[in-house]
Structures are given as structure tokens and as C-alpha cells.
Length: 341
Image (tube, rainbow, N blue to C red; front, side, top):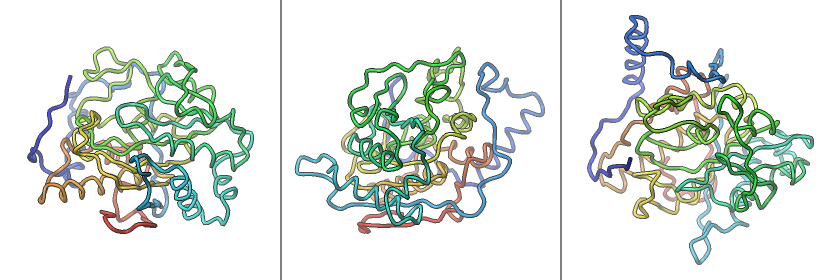
């Protein structure tokens, strides 16, 4: 199946009120027996909502570097690592990198770093910077797994040398999640997505499961219906939710239309990184950036189509974090021109 690129808006913006109305109608339909079985009736790792949303505001640190790219247009690794370090200090309130990263990891941890290798891949320069940060907490290089889907590599070369096939358990979840890692880091890219609206932190976990397809026929995890709203359930699987300690979003060169397939026209050198512990808040901020860029590009309203329902569902159904910007403490650092949020 291939995406259809639209040059003009074809949908209205999904407001919080409209989403809640749709959710209420869906609940009514379920009560009346109008819906099918749960999309996870056949899955062994059942998503479990939190009892409550996180207390207080969720902090998201957004940092940008004007000189993030070298003369060849590639991310400048030293600068990427510098702004990641600064963002981590701001997120934690610590004064050293060792202390900042030690908020999340212990020397005895085995850390799975969930990157993305598809179409708009996580920048290897950022992946390596994250690995070096984890090592500041005392984690041995050989205990850091950079991975997506059934490809994995260990240590600093893991982002480019993937020679390990970790496999999946009998319930279609990556063995890195269930057996190997004691801690996880989510390192997604930033893009508009023709099926889900956007693909950032929440959707990145779809790469941790197997036996899925766009039509959901025979799939263990039926996540593609209703604009992929139920992909919000994957980070609610206890093994993921309880082990994921940090989100580092690659917003160096986001894709603001048509993804995951890449039309270079819709890439731009934003030069950003976001760090957070709340994946929903991270997605909400990225959604705002992408929406603003689309309006800027079009010179008028250009809503994301389809609306990213999974971001709202992650809050309202699975209680994974805050989608409401009023509940997000956004810290803006670095290059301010064109921040867009």
C-alpha cells in the first residue's frame, strides 16, 4: 500500500473535545455490543493503563543548535553530543553529565536503546551520543544495545553495525524488552505519518513487536485501525512502560508531510533534540512543531491528516502522560529562531 500525498488540507484538526466525543461514542458502542473484540484478545502482553496520570506537569526540554550540520549537511556529532548533554542537565537539574545520566541508569543495567532504522532513521550521531551518555552512568559499552525490530548491535557501533538477531518471544514482543534489557531508552525520529498522523515516541514502540501488518489481518497486535489510534497501547505493555526510563527525540531534520516515505521537499534542518520522561508530552510538543511548520510552509491552515489520535488516547485511555500543553512544562534552550513552539 502506498501513501497518497495531498497538497491541500483534507481534514479538520482533531480537537481535544472532538476526540473525547469520539471516545465516548466508542465506549457506548462497546456497551451495546457494536464493536468487535479487543484488538489484543489474541496478544499475550496485554496493555495495562496506569491508575493515574503523572502528578504535576511533565517537563520536556527542547534544545536546538544553529550549527547542527557540517558542510556536507550531516549532523555534526560533537555539537549533537554537546546539546544532548546540556538538555540532560536541564531535565535533571544536575551539574555533571555523570550525575544526570545516573538519574536513570545504574552500572549493572543492560540498556536497550530503541532507535528507528526505517525510512527516516534515528541519526547515528545521536544514537552514539546517547550510548556515550549511558556510559557516563557507569554502564559498560557491551551492555548497551542499539536496536529496532529484529536488528540489534552492541555499544557505540550498534547504530550502524547490526549483526545480532534478538528475536521475539512467544507473544510477539522483542526479547530485548522481555529478556535482555533491564532498562530502555526511546530514541525516535520526528515525522508526520500518513497512517498515524505523526510518528514520534509513542509509535516508535511498534518496532518492538512482530506479526503485524497494515490491514491487521491475522495480526497479534491490531493497531492500524482508526488512524492507528491503538498504537498507543504498545508503550502501555507493562514490560515496556516499566523499563523505559528516558525519551530522547531526534528532531534534527524532521519530516512534516507524507511520511514515513520521504519526499525531501518536506524535510527541514530544525536542528533540535527533545528529552523527557513522559512520551505523551514529548509527542504533544513534536505535534505542535509539525503543525506550525505545515502552516508556515502552506501560508495558511494545513492540518495533519489523519489526526494523531493515538497521542490523545495515550493520555485518556492508557494514562501514559500528558497530551495537554497546559500540563507540560516546556523548556526552550539554544537557537530560538524558528522554534515553532
